Image (tube, rainbow, N blue to C red):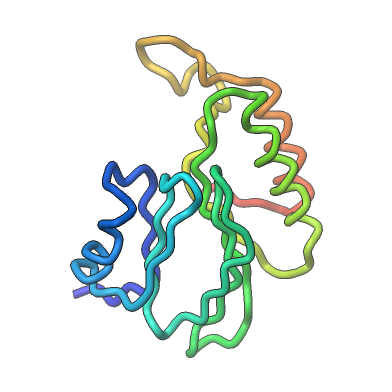
Length: 146
């Protein structure tokens, strides 16, 4: 069996009151959800997790694993679909990008980098402005696409 130290769930489609039930089922020690309940995170005691900020579109934490003493930051992202509603997220990510601490972002940015990524339906998630914001942040920090 896998020994996971941290799990994030985006858009859990469950009431926030159910988070402890999920924590037990996932065999995790701690749990947290953001303001609108769209991002849930779970972690075990082997992770020292401090919530830096939790907003509608992200949870950002400072982490340290008991076996690896190097601290790093992680932002779990569930971005809004509209460019003007994403703006506070981009501003916050840009602010975090100036920190010298290693930082990981993971999640759903709800943005396509090109129209070729979308098959069928509307291409309403192709937001050139959002792409430019993402590029501005990532190239300043040396991001790697996984």
